[in-house]
Image (cartoon, rainbow, N blue to C red; front, side, top):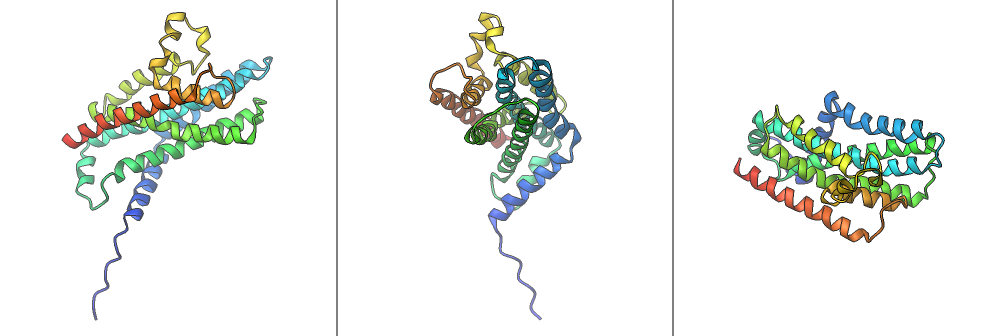
Amino acid sequence: MSAMAPPAFSPWRAYALEARYEFLRLLRTPSFVLPVLSFPALFYLLFGILLNRSGNGDAARYLLATYGVFGVMGVGLFGFGVSVAMERERGLLTFKRALPMPRGAYLLAKMAMAAIFAALISILLSLLAVTLGGVSLQPWQWLVLLVVDVIGVLPFCAVGLFIGTHVGGQGSPAVVNLVYLPMSFLSGLWLPLAMLPAWLSAAASVWPSYHLAQVALKVVGMDAGGAIGGHVAVLAAVSALFLALAWRRLARA
């Protein structure tokens, strides 16, 4: 009796399996999934809804856009910055290079994971905005805001990957927080830039989070004005730059 032939190798199945197990791994990691999903929702519930009951709904609409950006930043920075650093330190990247899986499946799986978590955050904030915040948007606005959040996670995946390839596993959470929290504050994600000192608000445009926030605020009609193309170009440039720098580092490792 002849031996059964092994199943034909399918690169698409390899990509899908790597993405699936990466998502399940992080979904079963409470130290990642709980803060990433709960912090944006809790902050929005507190500052966007509970403390603005007497407002006209502008705060809830503004913070819906900016806390969405805050949430996807966390997914990209922690999902790449911390996990890549720890996996690199433990030798998992070396092990994966020895596996017969397509080149790039590791990074694409993490990007897919980040996109799924970004979508979950965006949907959760939207549900809170509709049910408790009294936010009313056109159907196309809800859809575009979801797309902005999902695609907008990519620049922060690139920045997180850069951090993860240069920092050790033990120090990566501290380094990510040193990037994540100041960038959020200085980009106007927690409160409008008009409430910050002039010299701080004038420097907001150096942060990629500011440009993503302006795109999201454009969707809800509360941006600072100007063409959206410039913000998109900056985000694309940040993604390309940090991905290239991180890829170069990975190639040397």
